[in-house]
Image (tube, rainbow, N blue to C red; front, side):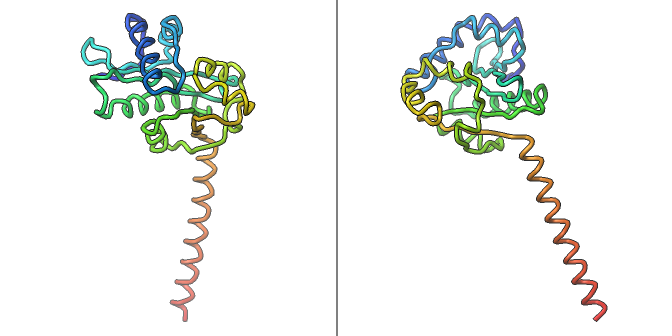
Length: 203
């Protein structure tokens, strides 16, 4: 299995990807149902997508969306062809695109909204944390993308504050601050231990 950054040679799979995203959303009964082949092509041409291929056979796909002047990044359209499901491919694709987005948008907060427990589990393992929708991008174009979801009326009635989806966020700045805090605490504890040990030796 080859998981790579999608390029122009992969445009041939755009219609298949679009149809698979739509059919999968229909089966789940939730989620964003439509991503046109033209939209998929734009993501491939801008090198904002990852594709999984088994030789020349399409196996999976995911793309990057950028919001709020690159302050936020979302991974969308994660899909695995039916014959390749249950083999860990979704996690491999998600990990690849997560690492790739960290490389090209190092300061962006990475977020997602999903109703799928498997995706939530993958996100959690990548360091995402559940958050309220108020902590996600306020870019209206992002929320317009939810209009094709059958649950959009819930989102509209709550003024974009909640829906059936769970919001998840990975904030590199928060992670850095947490690590700095943890290191400071550990250093202080070590100094206290050293001081106690020296006082004990002197006694």
